[in-house]
Amino acid sequence: MDFIARVEGTYGVHFVQVAPYMVRFETNVRPRPGVGELITITFAGLTLVNAESLEAWRHRHARTGELDRRLYKKTSLADLMSAANAELWLEVAREASADALAAFALDRGGALLAELRAALAAGDPVDRIAGHARRFAA
Image (cartoon, rainbow, N blue to C red; front, side, top):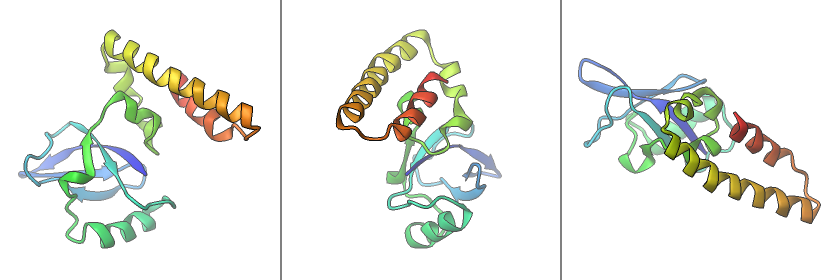
């Protein structure tokens, strides 16, 4: 499961607080992301999302509270379609260039349409896809 977070900093320590749960992880492994940068964190194996499950994940995968560099990347527009808290970060799309938005719409719009067509053809419920469509429209 992916989450988007903004890097914060104080006294040389870089960290993120995963919204809306406000669980804190440090991001000081070099090269560390800059303060103010958005990163997308992959919480492998996380299925239930709440503050307690994030704390449990930390105890298994980030005992010191430090995120391994392999667990996050710089946020891209595509992350808005997969991150569990993407609705909180729609500013990423609003701040993107027209070319970046057009490329995103072309790529993700086609993938979303194919996913919707496949679900309809298989007679599957489209609830999950409807959530993706709402996020894409926003």
